[in-house]
Length: 135
Image (cartoon, rainbow, N blue to C red; front, side, top):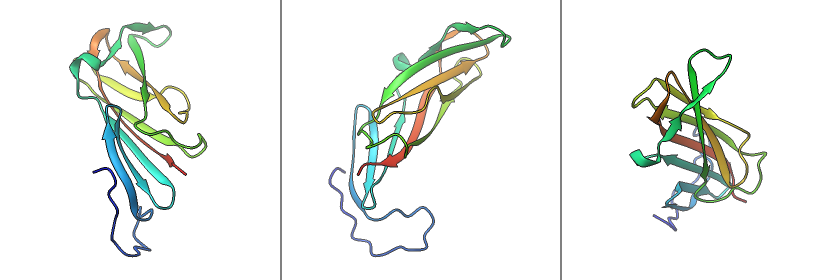
């Protein structure tokens, strides 16, 4: 779908509309959509069981909670960090787990933390959506 140009006319008043799509595509790091107003949406869904986040570090003073993290590279870099907002989730495959953003995202990577209720090396398929500017 790379190079997709929208032929849609003006959509003012439509919630979430950010202009015409000027480019979209995917690579090993996920998928992206670029809009004419400079907005870009990047998203990723972990599909490989071998790439899951391992939660093997026990968090002290947090009861029996375990932690793991992984840095993901966006499929296309954003232009600045002030415009990026992101969310993450994890599929509880072998433990009850949740995901969160570990640190403020930068223009090319996002650090995602996974918290689990027990030590596991197979916790959490990671998903994220990051919205920011490409121009």
